[in-house]
Image 1 (cartoon, one colour):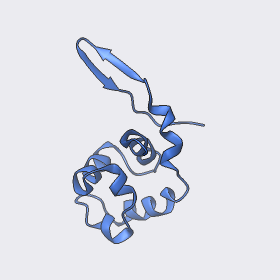
Image 2: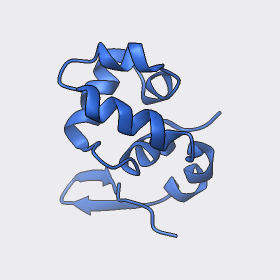
Image 3: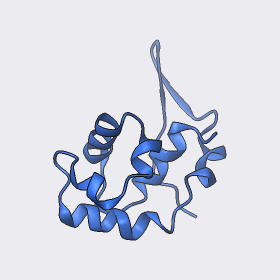
Image 4: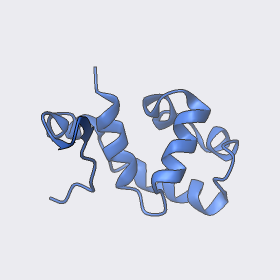
Length: 93
């Protein structure tokens, strides 16, 4: 199974989709994996995501494979005091 972090990275690769849009997608669909499988009409139901963004998502996600990012998400953490947070950045190849 592909980790949720891999879908997070895939979503960040879509122009016009930032952290707020990703959070809204996750809240609406429950997981980013479920959001990834949503069709155009379902994406348009997400609060704060408009037609232009949905068109960008539909056009760009067809060229992305979240499973490609699943190995790149392991063991990448930053530690600040007692808190450990995963690092999420755009992946450049």
